[in-house]
Image 1 (cartoon, rainbow, N blue to C red):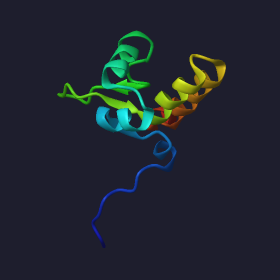
Image 2 (image 1 turned 120 degrees about the vertical axis):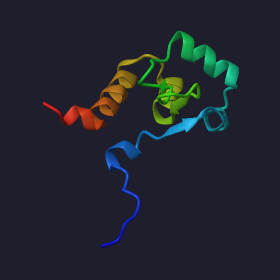
Image 3 (image 1 turned 30 degrees about the vertical axis):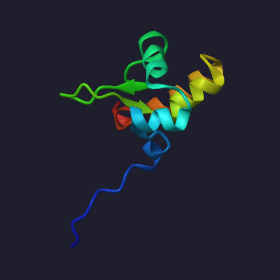
Image 4 (image 1 turned 180 degrees about the horizontal axis):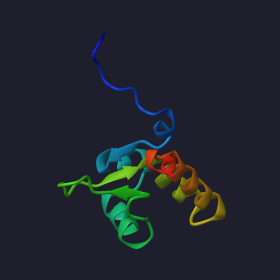
Length: 93
């Protein structure tokens, strides 16, 4: 029996969480602009979150980029719905 890292759930792989530095690099926005969006329009636990016991922000890279392209449109709300359904807790009945 081999002991290794658990493979990531492929449903969640479509929604990687990244640090602010990577979000800045991939979005083209400044850290200040991301913070403004975080405090005004982006949703906690959907677009970003603080890991337990940390002040660091992790960004849902796919959903942030989708928001930048689509805004708060029906298409973006559908992307959020797909993300929420991909969470293991959505399998609980």
